[in-house]
Image (cartoon, helix red, strand yellow):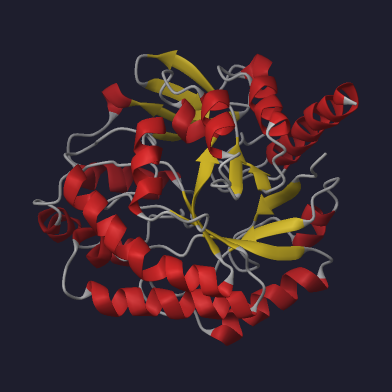
Length: 359
């Protein structure tokens, strides 16, 4: 039976209080999911910086085979003439990453904002804190949301919330005013048609991440919300290199999304090189908070999710996703050490049970 390639997201020595030495001590965790966070969106990732990151990870006794994320410039999503140069830069980055042995690039195609939350440190009954989303508390002005996210970050950079890119928020929204879901999907196809042949040649798989939350917000379209969207995306360019990151938390934010069914449909088609596995707790309509990974702590059945992966012989990359801050840790929202380490142990425990009872 297949073995999971368990990984742990790391934000680099300069911007992550968690060390590679600590990550290595998490049982059966051999992969670091990393990125370069000091290269502006749209520019080529320099080979020397990629190689330096790879050496740093490997010197710690770990592997670097998944990058999250090579973010896509807004001009590509909007479909501006300048996208040609940004796509050319992206292609060169793919080539450079391939030289370093990278096998998967996790990316998203969300306009303006990446993931959204209304509270980055919601206090839970057990004394821990976690990120929370309540649509009723979403500010009407996107500028207010940006200010809240920045103040709640506790000085950490937030992935997908590049301050230099979002500084001209009004202009950015204006640039997207004529981009509806159909147009955004057309621009995604243009991007995929350009990069997937390169990915096939250099053996680097693209793994698109779902929208978070999986619904339109602030008048901006979202095109990866559910199973039907996934069908449309895979048909944009028929190739196993045009794949998905199935994030159980992001898709699970819509209770109508049947996660085990989605896994059972797309894993056998070899369209899922990467999994984000996390739990969330529904606390009302369009409201949830992140939770510990076990099924008992959230609203998602993690056993059913892992069983779907096991039944489909999943042997790709996987990592625990957002966890709580526990035991006094005051880390990056969603990305503390302890709760994600506990999540790994729990997921591997489920996997071991599935392995032994299937023989």
